[in-house]
Image 1 (cartoon, one colour):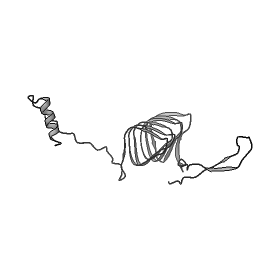
Image 2: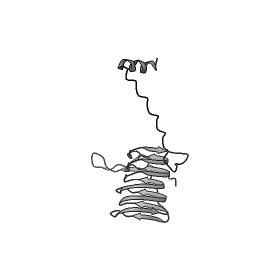
Image 3: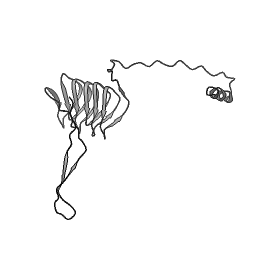
Image 4: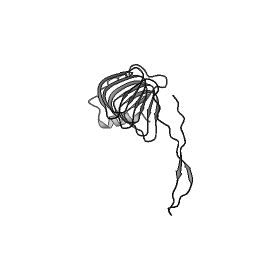
Amino acid sequence: MATEPSVSKLRVETNRNGSTTAEEQLVAPVTPLPKVDGESSLLARGDSASGSWVIAGNGELLGDFSGEIECAGMLLVGKGATVTATIRCNEVTIAGLVRGNIVALGKLRIAPSGRLEGDARVGALVVQEGGVHQGVIRVHPEGVPEEEPVLAEAPPAEPAPASQTPVDRVRKFWGEFF
């Protein structure tokens, strides 16, 4: 679901003397949070839950949750929500606090009030000004792999001969550059 940014107008009504003026200024574009349409699961503001939550459609988290979340549609973590969970879903929008790792097959969006403390593997990434992320994000535009690739381990380094002095090690090191 693509939403177009809107431009808001601000009307200023007073000046230094207390008299009114009619001045209009354009305010920076605002991208609204996506609406979760149709059937959706909801954890209301003020509610808390824990465990494993499997959502067949879209989901909205406005309260506190801890555990695991698997969502077939779009997941919205609302402003003021606190989530400590491993999340796997199609799309995620974070406007609250998420502590945990995320796999989003589509887009991960961190709103201005959003904060992600954990790692993420995503198909696309949008971090709006003010959004915060602490961790590692891997963006896979070609599609998120099912499993995290295992990096090949480097072969063990050969031990330095005991007769090698620090000067010999420096010569060997600098010899590679010259």
